[in-house]
Amino acid sequence: MAPLQKRALYSLVIGVVFAVALIVIFIVKGDVTTFDEDLGFRLMVYALWVGVPLAYLIVVNLTLRKPGQVDERDRLIMERAPRFQFLAVLFSLTAWVIVLTEVFSDQGQVPVIYLTLILISTLIIGTIAQALGILFGYWRGESRA
Amino acid sequence: MPNAGRISNRIRRLRFDNDEMTQEELANHAGCTRQTIIALEQGKYVPSISLAFQIARAFSVTVEDVFQYEETG
Image (cartoon, rainbow over all chains, first blue to last red; front, side, top):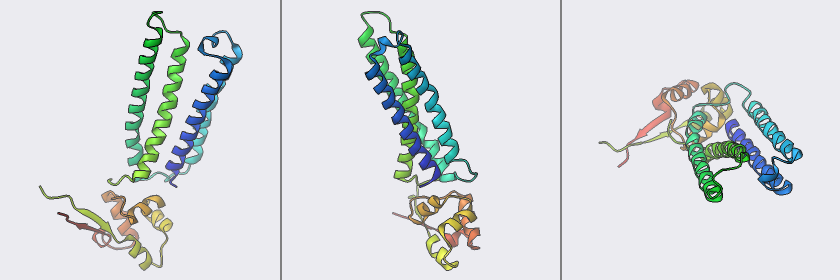
């Protein structure tokens, strides 16, 4: 397995674990309305908020530490992955807009916590989609330099 | 407009002709990863001109001794 492929796999795992952890915390601690009132709830989310990007940075540095681990084929695959990322982020933001509009249209305002959730979900989806784009590139076998 | 051709290569043959050079050794000589050599041997990847020259240089042959262009259609 190429080092970049390995990194993409680790990123995918981190992204999925982050997403699942976030969903579990929100299910266990209550819905988004308790976020403002429960300090423990907020601390858990902040811990994830700091811990996961840190884990991601460590993984990226450990898997692509040595020079010459990425060659022209890896770069080609890496350059094509953002297409996946762009589409995934676009769809997720569209989904947020539709859902929030439908749920809160009668109230005329959206709770502030959703700003954090939109940011976190965009980062998670961006990371997962980039990893999937890279893995798909290797699986399909990018054929032209 | 001419039809796009297919590029094949003799990398596997040349490796065996060169004291059974391993994919790792060739990758080190050519400045790419072993996975790229595997993809080249399987015909799943067409290298850049620069990498093609580096591979040919690793075997001390010309680029055309390694890569062949076959017209299709």
